[in-house]
Picture 1 (spheres, rainbow, N blue to C red):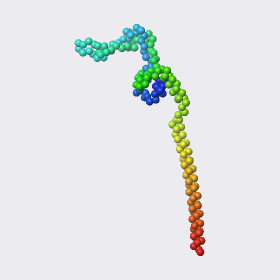
Picture 2: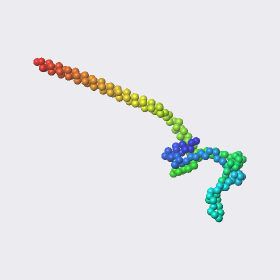
Picture 3: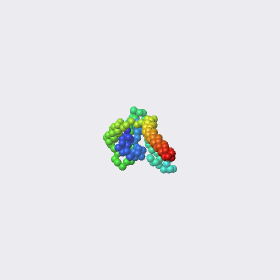
Picture 4: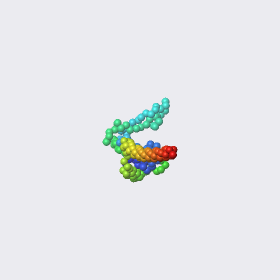
Length: 172
């Protein structure tokens, strides 16, 4: 399941990395009982003032150095998987069941979508539409031109009749 896409399906207005963060840390070490003392290391943060006592969390901190431990003996690597690390929406965080249902609905919707045309197919489709429109326009232009030619011929014939009538009337 893709948690981010499931959330986006449930809340289309949500923006990833702003309204929520889905995180996957990969395999994480989990200490076994009794290994805390074996890998415990003191990390110095800053030296205490002269004559002052060092305070944990201010001057030093303790941590685990996994290089001092043995995997499988002192700790195990556990895959937690993706999880919602931050939730900043004003609605309650969805449960695992809601996310699973949204994921299934999203996959069904994606499966029923018409296939997306590639850029070349889109250009070909646009070219075909342009050619069809051009052919229709050309046909209308041809028809108009033929109509204009017919009208000119009719006017020419009328003009010739008028001229013949004037010539016949002028001979009298």
